[in-house]
Image (cartoon, rainbow, N blue to C red; front, side, top):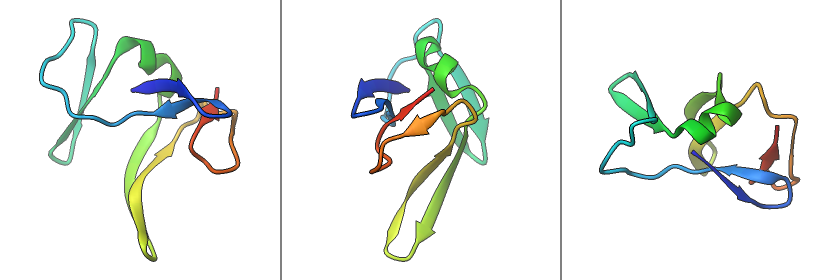
Length: 79
């Protein structure tokens, strides 16, 4: 999902969920299921999610075609 935070306004949220809401969307690929709430879907529609390892750093990488800008540290973005 998405939360309001940071100097650019929005940030991605990854968390485990126990129950689905009626308006949640689910996406499944390669044995992983992602659940996105309807409010966040507007901001991340078309986003590609990948897990990357670069040197000592590893984590999820978002490629969002709706993103207009991001803060200098890369923690938040605008659409």
